[in-house]
Image 1: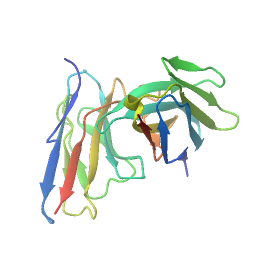
Image 2: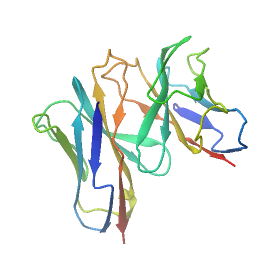
Image 3: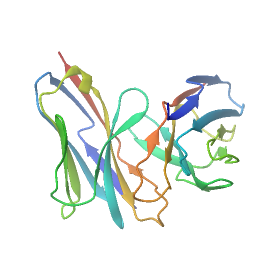
Length: 114
Length: 113
């Protein structure tokens, strides 16, 4: 079954802690993306990667970090520097990362900072 | 600054009603417009629109793009409770062919029995 998986589904952390969200895809897609979704604000791009070992900042990268050591994996670390980390995080992938590609989304991780 | 605006932000209808969701955009170097349906988890792809005036249709859902007036509409006829979801509109600019999407705020549709 091809698709995108994200784990965990729900995550709780205390203030001041770093936490890493997992995103894996077996679609053989080159490009992967991380979005943050807040109520009433739609999706905002955090980071994206069009190829292994390369990634670019999106619109709201501050307080986040990523790595892309393998084609199928694109983990996101939410650091203690992120001021308002409580949100729904969505990972997506697309075939080549070009403007004509459709992005496919994972089921998301809901992060709550206590 | 590029932006995508959806309206209404929320909508409550009864089964059998027809709804029209709006998406307007101001984006430099427009490439295409996408509609997604999000039911609590992963947004699922509905339509990609690139040309004006050509309706895309899938069952009770249809969508059309107007590149002159810079908007798109998503129509749902004979709504069912299973249509309840957030409908997201996103625009793809030709931004160095990165595939970056600019999303609107989403329209939350609730269909009551």
